[in-house]
Image (cartoon, rainbow, N blue to C red; front, side, top):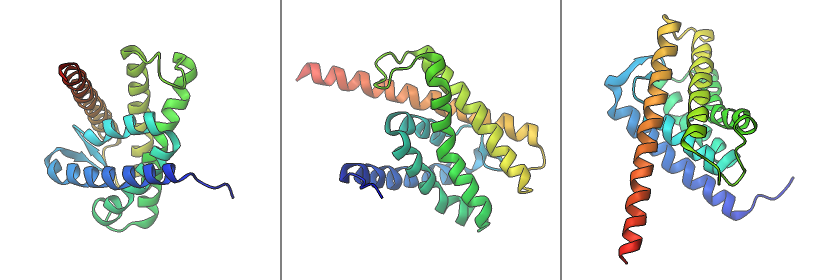
Length: 184
């Protein structure tokens, strides 16, 4: 078995813990935005998840999958172990698959040096469509959803709004960071 570098394990632990806390807190504080099974009309974790996986790759996807499990198992799906496992794995793999699917189409370099708003838009739409369809198919197969089309639309909308809000916040922090560095 290949040895995993210590910095990868540290990154995995940091992402798992911080994303898990953020995911749980967000879901707790936005309970009123939860309109369909596993679907919020505005879902910031979708934006955070996409950017984490974009930057950290397989490590980020694995951390996201592990971090979502406790909340979905203990809270969202009332200790339904098979549903919680499948949903958590899908939560981590879907952004990774979306990036891999779009990378060649949009000619994204491995170091992201040619990442543009248009390319980010393609990745975001691809991720949101695949995520909404896959997660709601999982919910349907496990008997959790009564209105599948509505659930897909709510989840898609929540993913897109989450991505846009997180992207805007990241851009704002980047501008403030650059401005602050120039002042020093």
